[in-house]
Image 1: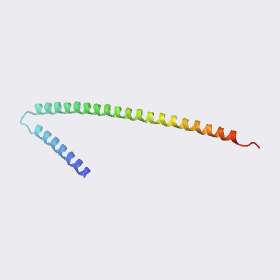
Image 2 (image 1 turned 90 degrees about the vertical axis):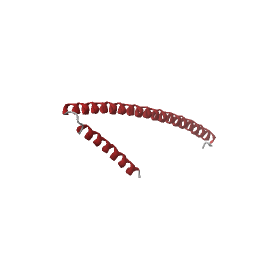
Image 3 (image 1 turned 120 degrees about the vertical axis):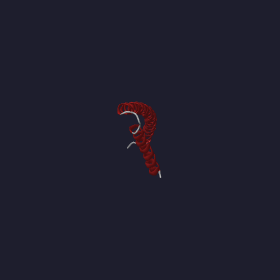
Image 4 (image 1 turned 90 degrees about the horizontal axis):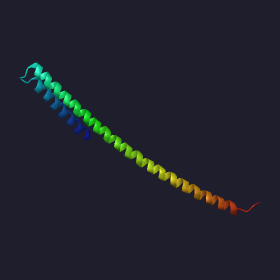
Length: 103
């Protein structure tokens, strides 16, 4: 179902783009004006796309940094717990060693 929706949206977008290009090319303006219009629209679209991509990259960087920070906190907590358990185990070992009868 998700793939069908994606295909539908891609088809609609492609159709809209094709219609826009056909409309520009078939417009009553002279060739020079049409080419200039196409060039301006492509340039504007390129700038919009570049801005959108920059925003998405910035969002992704922010999310990755958050994930890294969260993982570092979890690793630090795990390290603290392991050291605590190691100390408890060492104390128990020392106690058992002292209580063992010699020889």
